[in-house]
Amino acid sequence: MDRREEGQAFLQHGRGQHSGLPSRREVFPSARRERALLKKLLGYFVPERLADSLADVDLEELAREGVRGVLVDLDNTLLPWNSSEIPPAHRAWLEAARARGISVCVISNNHTTRVESALRELGIPYVSSARKPLRVGFVRALRQLGLPPEACIVVGDQLLTDVWGAHRMGMRAVLVRPVVSTDGPHTRVNRFFERRLRRLLERLGLWPEEG
Image (cartoon, rainbow, N blue to C red; front, side, top):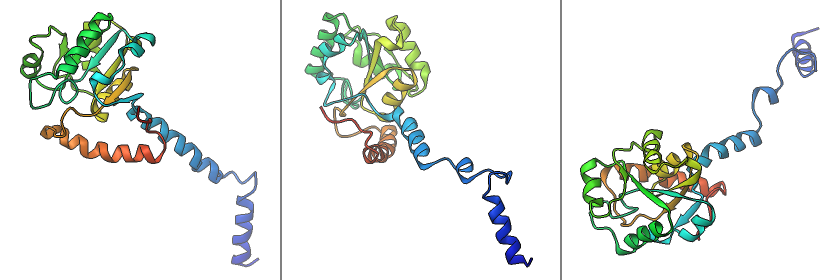
């Protein structure tokens, strides 16, 4: 038997059931499995709902779903990132939430001075320097409300902090449009990656429908 015949015999033997070598299917996961795994991982960045603004988050619907607490991001969700003036529609939403018995806690990665100056008149509990998407800030916020994660949702304008952080805690997330079209320096970095992430989610058919 020459070398060519030996090689063919080896290949033929390797394809058999008793070759002792793992099959290609065993070595490489199937494309379907890879896609399912990718979708599962990317699911952490997919909000359950989209809304134009905080004022458009339906409190009646939340109440029907048993939501008793809302963790609201500060900058570009509750108010512009470069202002301490809360829009009247958002003030009205906060009052309506209180009237329905839905507790609100503001959770922000910004420093205490900034958060205090924005919320001084409202008397709303808050967590500053929350370090979203890490769990520590969300745990502190839930403790302030005295509620479990399954009874709360997170409303924010960023995928990489608000949505991802919410899902890491087992909470649902509502993504709103930023109050203003500009961002602070740190957020601009996040937006760069978020735009690319959102395009990928849309291509994979994972992005929720508007409305």
